[in-house]
Length: 213
Image (cartoon, rainbow, N blue to C red; front, side):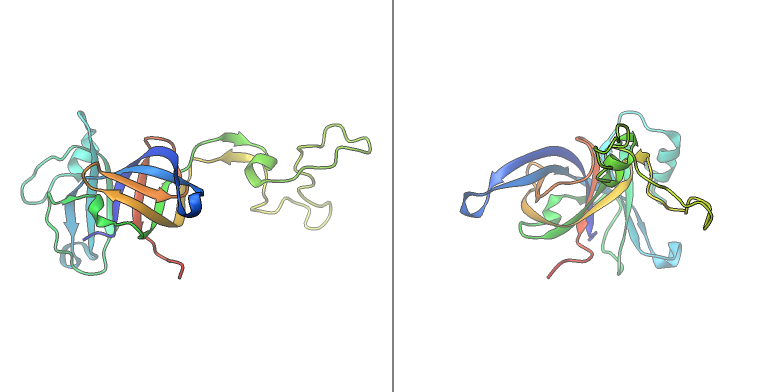
């Protein structure tokens, strides 16, 4: 069995936890996913399973070719195709369904998604700079990044310096989220905390790689 599943972020809400305290949760439509390919060491050099999620009416030619199985040559129409590496030889077959019953309440998982794109952002928004002082005659330095280099040595802007630039639209992993509820009947997964990405965006839910004890 795979260690993860594909899903769609539905949004955030809140529930009442222990002692009546409210807790922020994220609702995810997780699965059902279909196994479109099983890779083995003998044929591919490693062990993995490729899952498809989200049916589409019309599919690009490139994805049609990737979704064809070696034996049956069946074109599976899915919006998302993702591969999960496995440690040992899986007892899985092409066409097998993977649903949210993979998890249960109390499990610790990692959520992977594409963060919201913020466009071009300044230093305060992108790197949380506190800005310069707004007194002693400073009228246009409140949100400026400050000095970015020196004069003689090294005489250039160092590589990797935090400056203004593109913010967001990057792959983000949020680790060690607790599963509060897994409902296979509704393909619903509720996790404690925030999950990266926009509403209706793709989310990969997998068992925590580095679970906190």
